[in-house]
Image (cartoon, rainbow, N blue to C red; front, side, top):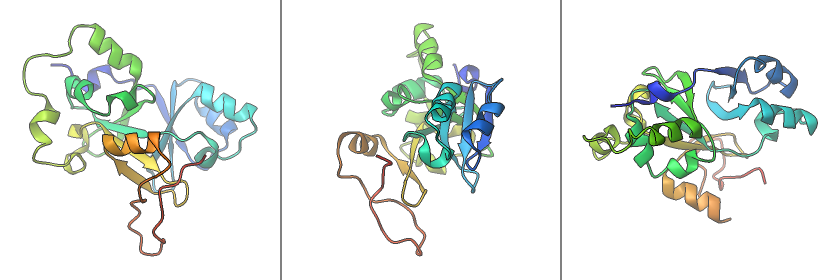
Length: 200
């Protein structure tokens, strides 16, 4: 069996959301990916050095607000790669990269489209046996599993309150295909109920 940790890239840096694009660029000179975190140390975006260069060229100043909307995908390092390939969120992974977490929910790597393709092209897809996702998801929600066993999940940052919403594949399709967006999941009673807001 092949696991996410066998294919993930460890070439990333954590970047504070209040950093300027110039500061982020300095951190990424020797890394392929930057993981931008908010004040609560939640990952809100995965960026490449080319995206940071574009932000500088466009004179952007705020990493948390000025970068294009992106889904945040996360998956546990001990999830089988076949479970990732079989996930209904796989098409979303083609458009972005997934963060990889360990048992403490710390970010330990990035899983890219190229690495998924490497797994599929290597002939290891559709191995015999029950995948972790098929085995456990019927009884436990993915968010209840330990970070290293959590199946592929999608998150989206509300541009009004900055809350990180958890989305299933159907909700991802709704956000992609319509202006009738779902309600933001922010549980803070001090925040007025509102529709999930995109940047544009």
